Image 1 (cartoon, rainbow, N blue to C red):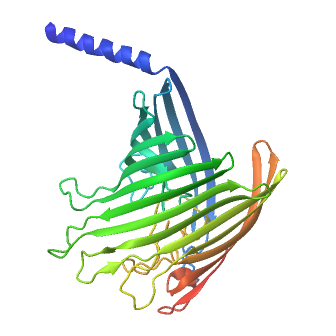
Image 2: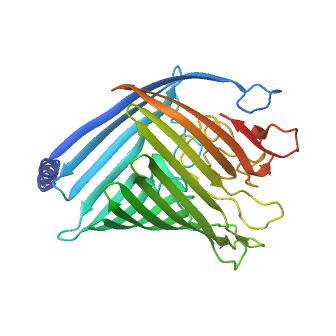
Length: 379
């Protein structure tokens, strides 16, 4: 009987807590359906790589807020389930492998302020990006992370610990962790600047005995502003550090510059993008190519980078080239226009010209087998 009473007490406290803290609860969600038809995705006309499908994505989120000091969110989704097939979601934020079920957790976090202090802590599975999101972006399926932030006036300082990848749960030396210190300063209501310092620590169980670690340091600068005629976004990333886990030390020397502008004219908007990401230099023992940690969503073009391999020339890939690598070994120029037809319908047209910074033999280059080229093309 005592055990039964204890259970009742626990249930009563749980119910009371739910009533006491879930003061403001809201539900949001979406249902998206798309049909697609692709031809020759490899760029090799001698091989057919066609794809046609209809897919549906469903998202459902619950938000809870208790006063000004405590809030949380849980969101679930199925990731583009193909009609006519019972399949798992097509991937998490960092790897192309499918997860275990049809429904996955996209967000699950709690955000609370410390009593009488302008300090907040946010922990759990959350959507994250640094700056404009060209070095680190985890906005598709989120990442497990702790975030502590302090705000005073127009300035916000934050420290973030992201579990980028968990290897074997039985090993502590095969993970990837990111440690970030960032500062965001609001110049005025229309202009914001930021800086982020990131240490990506790669643990390697197969490293040379006695060798030091593998740390990639990224320094990011970003700007978001409204200059009246034009709205601007910019990001610069510079990388340093080294990989000492192999017989020959490899230093990180990548960098990238991305600038985006939009000129609004009533219901019409004109936009442009200039981007440059360093690539691997022939004969170099260093990592001269910009290294990015990006999710599997579309980042700029729809075919290049999202559907077909980029000019990213990692020696670990055969042939070179991966998806979702941002502007790694890529220079891009974009011009476009958008028009707001009605309150619920927008139309846009964009033209991209793409080139590889360093010559590559990825299939998109279209050269003969074994040849290299810096040409990518138009989209």
